[in-house]
Image (cartoon, rainbow, N blue to C red; front, side):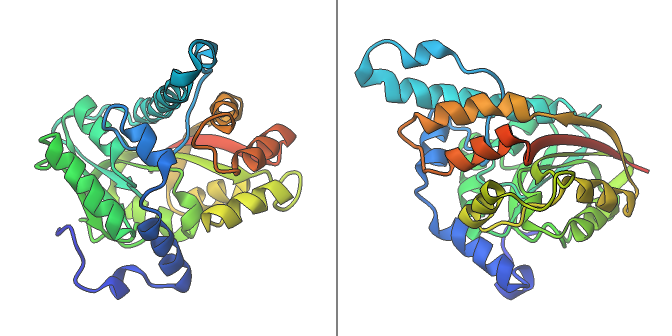
Length: 287
């Protein structure tokens, strides 16, 4: 499988996908991702988990912004570690898929942890190029490869994956189409791990705060129940569902005070605290 597609029209099939790709292709200097990734060269495209160290807000004022950046990066790397810890018994002989791979940080961490091959797919040509450069810089490009492909149609071999993950990317796709593709790619008993924000449809439709998040990121946040309906339709059996909402709130509280705050922090905090938005980790096996 090559790292580029000869015809972007084969990858970007809808106006929505084109708008999402354009957002990430043109949002290249986003300080939230770049400043945090510069701490240790692991560039993520997701949020953080765990309590932050309050001492980062104390001490010399002139170094406080960088201390906060360092701490936010620690929390987002911790989030990736939580996800990777759920992938099961992965060995060097296995192949994994990072569906919606961003700038590649989690894929690089997975290779370091398991020693296996990872393919990452993204509809952003910029992200694919950036992530492949990072793999080359770390000397792992023989095992960690990123491709300009749509996660709904990856072109990978049926049954070729021991595990697949999506880290805050399912809000950009139709869940039934995505889970059908993941089910096709997974071997029998293979593992799928999803960390995502979803709206609480027990309390009704999207809240104002959730709608603000949708608008900011040009995404389509799904209802919590829709994840389980789409999994059931595609032979993915949940074995663990963990509500991470309380664990992610500290990250957003720290980010709201940081030099890279964008203004979207308040809708996230409002939605989480009012209960209209949940941060879930769903672990499922292919039946």
